[in-house]
Length: 347
Image 1 (cartoon, rainbow, N blue to C red):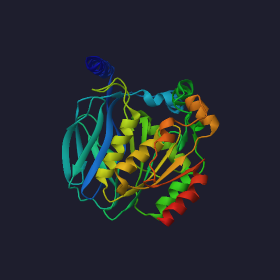
Image 2 (image 1 turned 30 degrees about the horizontal axis):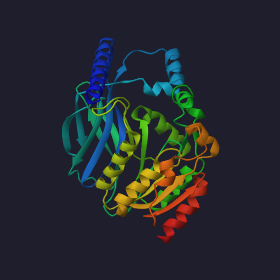
Image 3 (image 1 turned 90 degrees about the horizontal axis):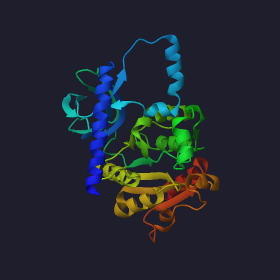
Image 4 (image 1 turned 180 degrees about the vertical axis):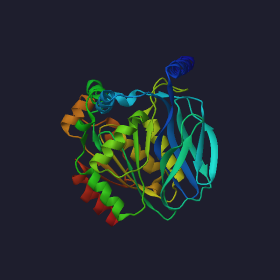
């Protein structure tokens, strides 16, 4: 099995190299897609991706067509990451050079930056791509509150992972037709207003390619800005397909490491593995979890997602008695908000 997985990685790398070479011959040039990062006065995590994009004159008709098509979900998946290329990262007075990974992604932690609490901008560039600013949220060491939110079926109705509907939602449906879960944006806004300077981090098994769409979606529906920790598609050194639960476990552990002083409110849904993963994290790191809030999918959403009206078995069975942390559940943000407020007030 191990050799088979290694072959998958080699095939993926070979295909990527061929695509990059072909597009360069067609006149495509390097461009940096910045992702929102986070950090503290002691360190900063910088995120982004180096891709190839076409450089050519556009007619008004072509620009109109591109603007229309860009709102189709499938456009989010069509770009070519540039692997193993040097990128210069500048954070304050610090500058360093790193290499993009196999997918063209940039993920580096810079220590000793001394940036003040609040929002800042770091720059990324290559010898071909101009400097591009990436937003960074610096969280103060005296901050003890934070939000971690899932995306699919928690703030955005997707009906994943039903293959036919997922393909339609991701590749065909226009972005304007994607629905926000009622009340979730209001709940997040109120919680962050009550805790100025607190971070919200969106942790999802969704692909990094969807970040431009998610940014537009969140802005349109009033969700607070915050870093996103998503994942890449395709094989790894250990498997043909990436594990969504493992990605979330790793992201939660990284946030606990990077912000040891924060007790998180974990918000997810019962359509996938969020309840089990959050309870597991709370059991392992009880000092890092203040509350678990679970959005309960309707029977229709459960059937569309799993072919059954019942929640996943691990979500229902993985419980500790007595509970490690308080857990609340509701149909949407308007249902969850008063329960979350009462639980936090009584803590």
